[in-house]
Image 1 (spheres, rainbow, N blue to C red):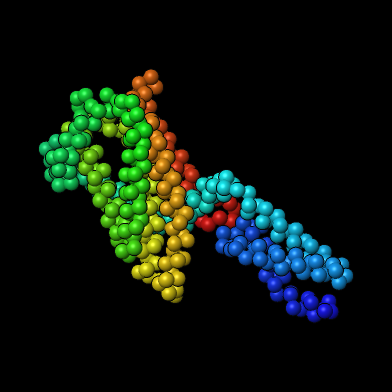
Image 2: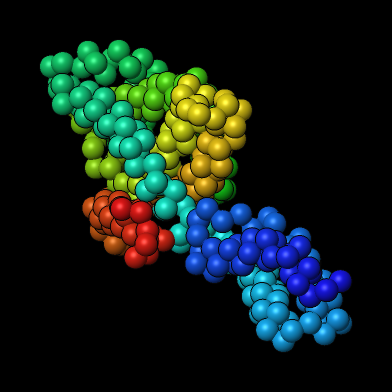
Length: 327
């Protein structure tokens, strides 16, 4: 085959490969590297042919440079699970949360408004809202942990108790997150409902303990793990709403295509939420129930909780941000 004919036949694929390499080297978030191995194989074959047929030096140099760039990207993409996890947590996850900032804001409002409303309108003379959310048996459970007398938390969990509770928290909290996410298929309404319901439960517990219990026991126990557990619930809600809206409002895509696209968006959100829930379970099981009297007790753990909220805020605001990042 003559050199000119060889170039005419393959020039389109060479340009496609070059565009893919350029986008990948710039860390474009929309680049699809699934074609990279196949295109690299064809590019290597073209380079071998060009050398064998002794085509012009500039063509051989061009193809050789592309093959080298392709091999570097393949090696970079195969660095292993450690590098991929690092990139996910330092860049992909916070960027995914920022991308859905509108849903993020909606989830915050759905959680904060009912919780603070029930707290604001509850006092020792009026616990009607609390009683409408928590029955007598639920109030007795709260009394046993956060009552004014001696509590289960002060007595400790006994041998193996922390590990048992760790398993319980993992199962319970991830089940809640999955419930919030999965119910989003109902047009996003299901996710909002479960966020609203859990916010009412949280607000009722706080209001009840403020009136009938020992608030420092409650805040000392929940403050350290609450940032990660509560924020994970919100992010699960965001993922569920994104999936639900893709079915309700598919736009120009078919509903199937819209659902698949939303799934790609939701995956980093739900994986990140599950990781945060796992971290929260570790803290809740092995730290939160420890009195930490030698460090200042509940007040110290409250400050740890405040630091956690600030750290997560900075993480989601700045994580993975570059000069070309979204605003």
